[in-house]
Image (cartoon, rainbow, N blue to C red):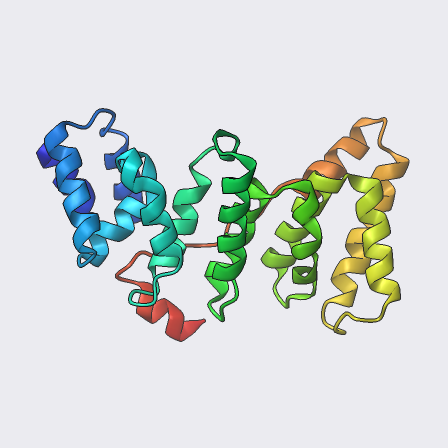
Length: 234
């Protein structure tokens, strides 16, 4: 298994990483010791990024500490993205409410950045870790000038609050005149779609409209090698 693990740790292409990870179903004590050593040293960017993206391979006593460290990493700006992707692979229902809130808070802090792909991907993780009383804290991202961010935040609000409550929320936001001229048409269109859903909620067209509103959009993710050039272009 050591050879396969080394292939995983050194993999640069994300598709290769996915394929190799499927072969790592059971890790030996030697494998776990190697992973722990990498995470303790925190000096090998490719290996660390790969592990953060597949936290099921990280020994449990290192897993969440490593993910939180990745989210808050100042030394390698790719780590927060890798940690966000990794958190998406963990079932939030396995956490206590207190710990889930801690993850949610860390994700909110992580997306306070100028790196668009981190914000975009962060909205997907936020959808998984949200609690009903925390939805107001993400509603302001509806005014963010990016279609994926706005769509995913709206999907999270609909999933957490339901159509009727989200309709009322959007109506209040639109009436408050706090939106930029760029974002207003997007929310007006989404509000019209929600209203159509509410009218047709008992037939198949209502179901299809709701599905289109609540399905999150996935942004393209560069690998670590592409990261610097990707940032310079976006």
